[in-house]
Image (cartoon, rainbow, N blue to C red):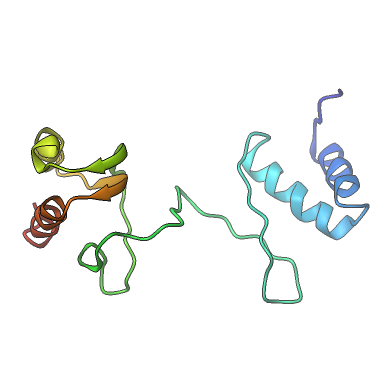
Length: 134
């Protein structure tokens, strides 16, 4: 394997990889030239007749929130530098979250919880905390 160095080499490899389509190759090359060789990309079917590139800062989560009470007026949740809690399975007891909730309240940072399921009382506590801006 030969390392790809410089935009022209990147353009050549991208065009060949795109079935010798120079237009698509130029789009691909511009993305990796801007973001670097280790960039993460997603290609999706579009609604228009032209190829487009969109850049997203941060991370987008494809799944939705568990309660509309967590969303703003635009029905979106936008967090800046949240603490992230990954939990495999169901969070069944609010006591399991007390130390995490105290930490994010003290540091005044948002908390993103990713889990399979929340018990009803846990959901109620989180919604009430959100409404009280705790």
